[in-house]
Amino acid sequence: MTDTDIDARPEQGHVPWYVDGNFGPVFDEVTDLDLRVTGSIPPSLSGRYLRTGSNPPSGMSSHWFAGDGMVHGVRIEAGKAVWYRNRYVQTTKLQRGLDASDPEVMLDPTASSANTSVQAHAGRIWALEELHLPYELSPELDTIGSDDFGGKLTTAFTAHPKLCPETGELHFFGYSPLPPFLTYHVLDANGALVHSTEIEVPKGTMMHDFMITRDHAIFMDLPIVFDLTNMESPIGWDDTYGARIGIMPRMGTNADIRWFEIDPCYVFHPLNAYVEDDVVVCDVGRHASMSMQPEVYTPPAHLHRWTFDLTTGAVNEQRLDELTHAFSRVDDRVVGLKHRYGWGVSHRDGSETTLREPGVVVRWDVVTGTQANYDLGPDAFPSEFVFVQDDDAAAEDEGWAIGFVYNASDDSSDLVILDASAPGSEPVARIHLPQRVPFGFHGTWVDDSALHA
Picture 1 (cartoon, rainbow, N blue to C red):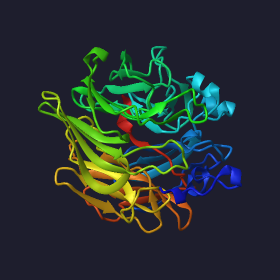
Picture 2: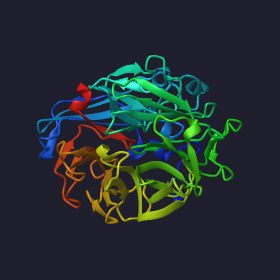
Picture 3: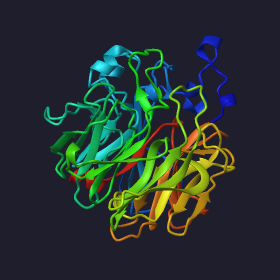
Picture 4: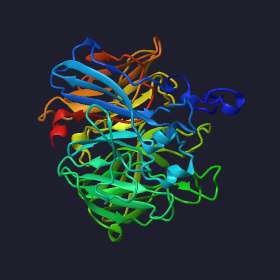
């Protein structure tokens, strides 16, 4: 995104970019039980693809991140597209008609936008946003209510928890502009909150995501910092704050954490992390800097590898790819473990990534150091794609990459299924949706087996 992309200001009588075109909301909650499909849906898929995003019911919000959450979902079973549904998450913020800038939103832990991601765990589904409690949804996307785990959770719940594929634990954290600034939590495989501990950091920072390995929890203390004395711009880049990575044993406490200084940068989304011998490896989408003002230019993300030697203390950083990208993901079965493949979205001509321009789906092979694209056409705008294995024994690339794609040529959206083992191939299936899906944030595949936990 460049400065010239942002030429619309509310005070000029124009529509801000983040509520314009396919960034703009849809206003109807739809149920469609008769979906048209091009191609063949793999019969191994049985579950729901769910994705949330910012969808202000008034048509206007103060920031792209501030609109009320609407979840879009497609149910797939036995080679058929059973339904499409889109539903607002019925949060306190939505029901009271609050903007994210209203003081009540900061003070009420239930006043979530619920617009950032969706997570299934222990037979439940939550819509998440990083400064409030999660909201539980039914499998049909009806809102059940906010969840504080029996009163045990007294902080926010990150929009990017990490589900350990080996233990079934869900690791997460909460950050805040007020003390405690950072708290680490763990849900056990049954969904009970079994561990909470405060992590000491100098200030409240916008810690959007984090990482785990088989042995560690990894926190990114980066220089997007809260300053509540400046109410016109209460969060922004601080050149004096520095940047560091905190690595601690899973289920550890603040006494166990080790901090490693890195060059100042910002990371919205890591790809994954793992430990090899005594070295922690983190593959991340690194921005050279970051602005929280929607009209200010922000450098794009490039895939980087950080390594932290726990024996010597040595830190190394390496750029892995020249492509800019967004929405990096790995196979959920290798979260915290050594990975080979990753998925993301990039600009179609290889320049800066922005959803304002047509894009391609990218598959990285970090072992060979190569990348390959799925080009869905000159008018295609792919959102985040997630990997779904073909069966329990499938390798890391044996399965399907699934995500929403907006088609600018006819103002429509599809759920697209790609063959993960065949980069460059045409989609295996396109499920045509009854209305467009606005550009949003993060989604997940909720396998039927996850709801029977």
